Structures are given as structure tokens and as C-alpha cells.
Length: 237
Ligand SMILES: [Ca+2]
Ligand SMILES: [Ca+2]
Image (cartoon, rainbow, N blue to C red; front, top):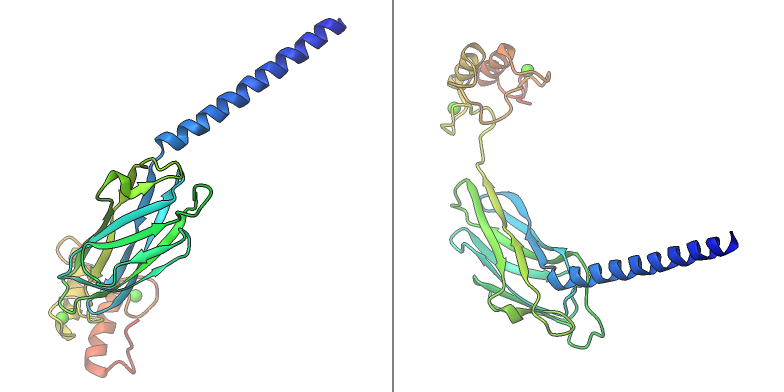
């Protein structure tokens, strides 16, 4: 019986050792096939705004150097600055803010891979005054396989997630008809919405003007009174 127990313990030990080796092998494999995942944030803005767009590492198998280009539409966005987040060590950013904008990090003195994730840089953009509503893309990439290296100076593949700036249309509060003027026509528009529905009368803003949590005919009356008696008596919520 004792021998049997000893044998069982030995078998368990051997299996647990094999299991540990298998896990170790799997981890090594993950590093070899893993890609550096880099994602650009998507933020909202209105024309003329200044916005911050973060670039994050989402997956990191381990790197010591990265040279990355950022491509954006210069007709819509003007890059005015870049702030390193201090995650990837020594950095060198282009002085001239043009697209493609090149960002370089190098930890040549490091004695092991950097496996950090999170924000690595924040880009500061000005949105053109004449920017039209819609999303303008910001992409990141590497130009050469050797632009992303690990401690063993092996190329690490790069996987980017596109982001950008979504320019929202600035709407005049109460201007449901979208002609940039607030008048009784907008109250009529809201009456039509409550009578005929959103298919024919789409709303470009929350139309709960009396602020009771519902959009109904009373809001059209409230809006009409606003245009007649003014915002002091009938403020638009
Ligand atoms: Ca209008
Ligand atoms: Ca209401």
C-alpha cells in the first residue's frame, strides 16, 4: 500500500512537472507569435476645437524599440503637439508636425523587454474651423518590419486599430428644422413630429424643451411660447 502511495505521488509529481513545462512552452510561444497591438482613440469635437487623442498599447508581447508613423488628414486636423506618457522609455518625436508624423521610442540600454500596456502618447490636434460633420481617421503603422523590435532584436509584428476625430455638427438649440434660425417654424416642426412621427420629421437634438423627460406636443407649445415670450419665461431645456 505504501509503495502504491509513493508511486502515485511520483506520478503526480511527474505530471505536474510536465504540465509546468507545457505552460512555459505555451508562454514562450505566445511571445513569439504575439503582435504589438496599438489603438488610436476616437474622440468627439466640433469645428474649431482643440482635442487630445490618446494612442494606447493594448497588447504587448515585449519590445525595446518602436518607430511608428501617425497618418491623419491635414485638411481637417492640425497637429500642434505630442506628449509622451513615459511608458516606453527614451523617445524622439518629430519637430515638424506634419502627416505622417514619426514617433520613436528606444530602450537600447534595457536589460529586458518592456511589456507595458496603456497610453504611450497623447496627440494634440486643432480641428479646422470649416471641418464638416463626420469622422476623420487617424491611423498608426510601421514602415519597416524592423521598426518594432524586442530585446533579442527580433521583429515584432504590429497590429493597429484605427481611431480619429468625430466632428459633430453644432446645432442651434430649438432649431429643429435645421435652417440655423429658431422661430415658430420649429414649433410647427415639433408638432408635426408628434403627429406624424420620426420617419418624416427627424430630430437633430433632444426636443424635451420643457424638461419633463418626455418629448410630446407640450414641448412644441413650449417652443412656440419661447419664440413669442422669450427664454426667460420659457427656457429651452
Ligand atoms: Ca429653424
Ligand atoms: Ca417635454
